[in-house]
Image (cartoon, rainbow, N blue to C red; front, top):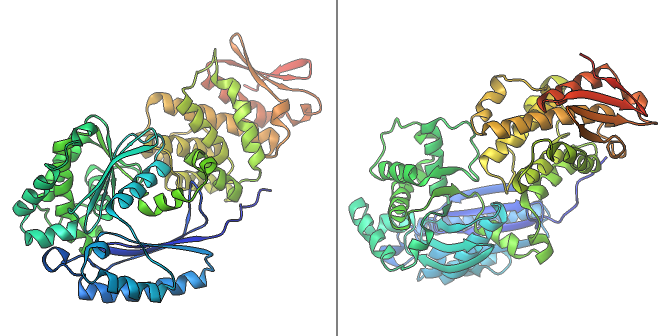
Length: 505
């Protein structure tokens, strides 16, 4: 039975203009899983625009949080800790004094990021967490907005602008009309925003995530996962404009946002609205990965960076929860024959998703049989998967569900069906049915499937069970194989040795 890969935990402390956060990851990987995650909204940069200094109360809260974070790092026996500080600490007159106190508490050097490096790390975070990212990355913090162009894994035009939420509140005196003028004046200095036209804009930062959470609530979106949440550009423009004008207290989802975050929400919406007007992106895509994940990504070798983040994440889940990772690899090869002519032919992205689905096919085996489908669906639909969009995530969750429950249409799966098209839904059902057949004969163990090939022969789907696997055939196997064949519009045929028998009616 597969065991979990052992990795040394890595901690990242991010001292931002609004929040101070500690995340302890289970290792420096392409798909890092957080072992511990805590943030404190300190508001270090609350008054930096008018006073030029870090907020005194914010400094006290931040130093207190850092003492706790140091204790947690020791308790978790972290071997490597990276500490970074961004716009507020970089620009404030009392920034050096604060950094010195922070270093004394943490016991190591704090890396003060330049605006350009901050933008580049944010972009690397998007590259590491969103497959084939192509567009502009924007990281909105309390003190600044970082922008960078990402195309083909390469970065260009990285810059930082003084447009963070807290800074805008301070600089405008809480006047949104004045804040709009400040934003437009800063964007007017950037002569390459039109390069984002028709491409995606990847939004990073707590304020923009809160904005997306509001959008989910108001549209009754069926999947409450923030990473890779996509909003059409024009819809996002209209929504951001409404939020920047102020929302009633009874707005759906508003009470779920902390009061500290609610303060900056209209200003974050205003920045996004003005940016969309200038850039005219195709879509706004929310990224839960930012500078912290970008920092981890920068530590990886070229070989590790080249790995597919979705396949890496699914491989880790398979190692932790499946009976055999090797069997998952065999499933990929075994199902290859189903998705080639004369069967349904795949695009490279569909093959990639099928690979991920194979890795996830057995993750629910420890659950009670009555709940394997539900638990597998929830684990995939709401898990820490990266490198996959929401339709792809829904496809994987439905495949895992059908693998355990059979091809059913019930309340639990119905909401996710809304996120996939008819072709993806059919493929999920085919894969789920194929997994049910395969696991009946292989019992999720390696070494069987390579000897029991599938093939199309005219109007038949033929499955060969040669000696010494002939005795693995049975009534339930025949029924499940018939379901698979029917989904492929074929007649089922199970061949045992040189003979064959029809699947049960």
